[in-house]
Amino acid sequence: ACSFYEVPSTYTFTDKNGNSTVSFSGQTDRLNQLEELTTYMKTGTSAIISANIMRDMFYNTNENGNGNFSFSSSKQLGNKCLFTDTAEFTGWITDLSAASIDYAASASNGQAGTLTSGTSTYLFDANGIEKVQLIEKGLMGAVFMYQALNVYFSSDKMDVDNEMAVDAADSKYYTTMEHHWDEAFGYFGAPIDFLISSETFRFWAKYCNSRDAQLASNSAMMNAFLTGRTAIVNNDTETRDDQIIIIQQMWEKISAAQAVAYLEGAKDNFGTDNAKFLHELSEAYAFIWNLKYAPASTRQITTTQINTLLDTTIGSNFWTVTTVDLTNAINDINAIYNF
Image (cartoon, rainbow, N blue to C red; front, side):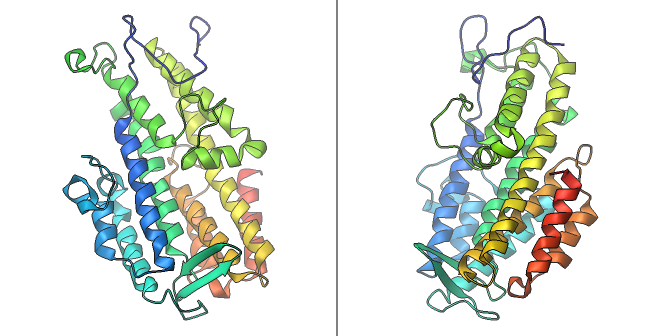
């Protein structure tokens, strides 16, 4: 459907006067907020950290995380998080703060504390769960993935004005539809020249790149974002919608494949390195959790399958997880996704 227009190789789009029509600064702000929240959370390995500070950063109190962000912004993570999951995240924040009280203790079954592997130290709760990972990776799902795939790619955000610049007098040269597509791209965390860039990839773009050898995910994601945005410029909604499905399906596969990679890492470290075992299992748990943010219309895994993996196969005490459990989880995900 796109034979009559040329798709650029980088995420660069201009109007007929040469003005850039790309804007996703709000998404960049939220990526920066999660980065700084994560940096603070990780200090819990050597100090008691405050649940109030983490909540202030989550809800961006006073537009600067109540003084805890290095920058000001009107954006926040809290109000873009899938509403039904906000209580889970604020609960995990409370748990993380409580675990940090025991940072000087060695973590063991029933005892919160820290464990070290090589140069890395991790903080675990009494059930061996590294809540930092559930919060950071979980917000990648509940905010970034959820917003991009379910909100910005919805008909509410896509079937909108695509003729008029939003406000050229205020240098907003993009149309409403173009802007919504850009915002979805902003949540992906890739630089505009993702396929040739040597920049640091952020959040989902980083994991997309780490799974690229397996999934060819970099070109699939970037080409779909570029083709869809070009289709919007050319009022080609059919091609746009085809690209949405490609992005939705690949984003889900990235999360599933990353979960498997961490489950395999946990299995490799089982019985020999508890710090790495629990750390990788916590990451795996979060990436399985994130599968529920893939839209129901394209999702390959059912809610029941996700809940079984989280609640039954892995369970709520990571110290009691066995290599059989890990193998079962790996096999189940591989079967669902044909990995």
